[in-house]
Length: 93
Image 1 (cartoon, rainbow, N blue to C red):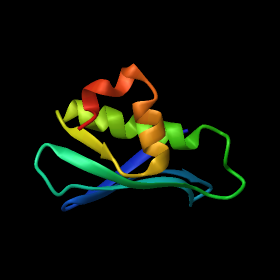
Image 2: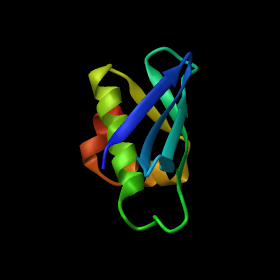
Image 3: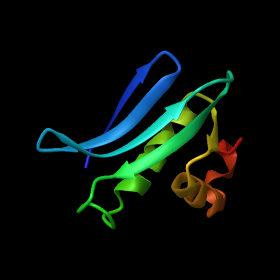
Image 4: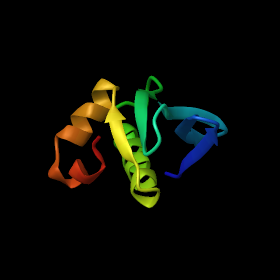
């Protein structure tokens, strides 16, 4: 599945669409230069357990690495994923 990204000003969203409908999204905002906060991750009912949330978190991590940014995981799901593996230590604020 393809993860898409939209960014406006200091807010952005990573999302996955299926048949023209968003079935999962991860919303973030940036208040400080050099980092962004993952506010929440939502997967539409019926799409849970398919790994979509993790795909979104990984897209956010790739974005952070490409842009030398740190992530503040305010969202409980994102926090669990990011703090649950040493793989993500380099992007945690």
